[in-house]
Image (cartoon, rainbow, N blue to C red; front, side):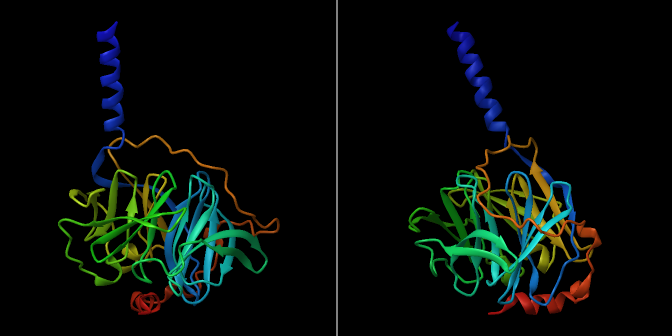
Amino acid sequence: MKNGLGLLTLLILASAASASELADAATLEKTISDSFFETNGIFLSMTNDGTDDWSLSGGFNVSTVTRYHPDGNLLERWDITQDGRTIAYNPENGRIYVKDYITNSLYALDCGTDTGFTYELVPGFGNRFQYNQSKIAFSPDGLYLYDHYKGTVRKYELATGNIMETITLDPEFTFSLDHPENYQIGTDGERLFFIHEGMVKAYAMNGTHIKDITGMPTGFLAIWSFSGTDNLIWTYNDDTLVWEGYGIYAIPPEPAGHAQLQICTQTNAPMFPAAGLPIGIMAATLAGAYGIARKQ
């Protein structure tokens, strides 16, 4: 009996160890068509609340939060009076957060109204991050968040804002695009992720490089919109006007648990496919988009 239990334990441990094994090449697994682009910003971030996907534009004093049905259709859009860099769902408390450029702070979204979201500053996170442009990523348990600036990653405790750890990437990759490669980050709790020259670069949580995953898009907006959520890596393709979600695992991890979404929504929200939206100013050149988002 003991031998049988021992073998079962080994099999369980082996299964757990392989459950998040990284693939050699990324695979396009999900797309969301959205041609929305206005003078108030470009798409910079994507998150998932366990059911719906949410995107965020940034680049001006007003950002736009967009919610999509699992089938990719647009459900709702709101403006927020922030210049957002990251939108991130917290699976521990069910709240959605936005990291702002202007105040370099973290806000929790509260209610969607006809004029936009209400939101509140998260205690301990006023002007807290390494740099105004830096993006953030939550740990899978929602208790911690990370940001990145020029090869240095900080781990913050959400409850207090305290810096729990400072991690140096080793070796630090040479940034081909100083902006925005200096600010991007993703994590699955076992690894830190970045995108560079068509690869997802995976580092252990201590900062040691462990693998490069090929098959990712290149270019300014692909890097700027880099987001990790619900076991996918997302980038926005400004040529096709499509959000692209890439799988990077040889064996996909088990879906994480999700707290109930703690947010109000409009009852009169627009209900129409994103593909039906006008292209608007998305025809702006990549150089123009670069100028909008740089704002240094």
